Length: 384
Image (cartoon, rainbow, N blue to C red; front, side, top):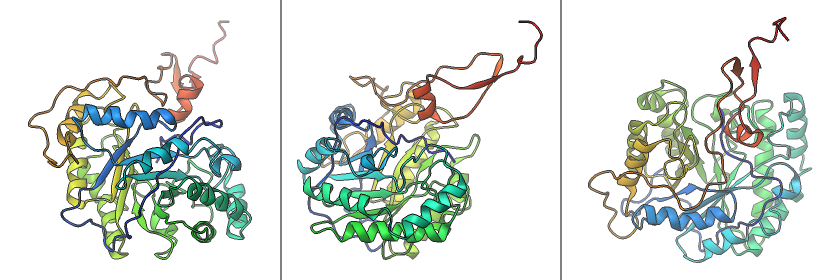
């Protein structure tokens, strides 16, 4: 299952992380009945993502977005360490209110989206399990503590059960688990830290069952799931019931005494699907994850993407005003409004010519290359 999330550009400009008192890890997969689950959206990897939090809140009639979410670049180790200037604005935002939460996706490998072979991944995982990369994660932990965001939620090695990332688990699950445990132990050893580590596979079996990658209760604080509306034609009920699906996720977390989360969710293969939006929000209201952040760019989003007006109206209606002391949804959906600034994350991708077959490379890749790559159907023609 493809993760459509960016690893962030190689030369980040300026974001940062949260800091504030960390609530103790929940002992079950649900929150106390009176506690409003934190929610937010992925709005941009950098400083504009921070600015748009207030804009999205205004669009939601003052709803309080308590979660800021971004990704560290996975191109090289120096960026995985948290390059200077990248995390600062996020840290500033986090520190403004004690109840805010900063969620940071952290790659476990450099060259994370460069199609590294399974053989090379096995070698890298063995090196990681042996401690060869510990110093990079120590540097990241020290940077976060120095920025006074020691309670950052670390979504480490996300969607490890798929094939998209170099930090995938499938080539050697045992080495992957040892490597995860080394990273967590290294970061927890930094004085002043209060990190929480979120184990987040993608929904469903994907390349390998995500339960094979679970590194153990001692090093996992939250059990997350990235859950997009895919594949084509799969109903929400099927997403709940499928092997390693939404229900399996809730049950697994409950068995292990961990809270759940949804760091990535949104529309995808089934287009503008208000039924999915309604059902996913109801699912989260029922099961009360520690936090959720919708992926808000096309084709997944509801605010920065104008391709999903019906789903946008549902999202706005059900979340308007939440966290302002009322938590009462609007009476009826309102038409979606466009944000005041153009998103810098993927939006509409140009369509390929009629005489070629498109290759599915993922929205983030297609955004940066300017469209889909395709094979021409008439390449064998003698007419030149």
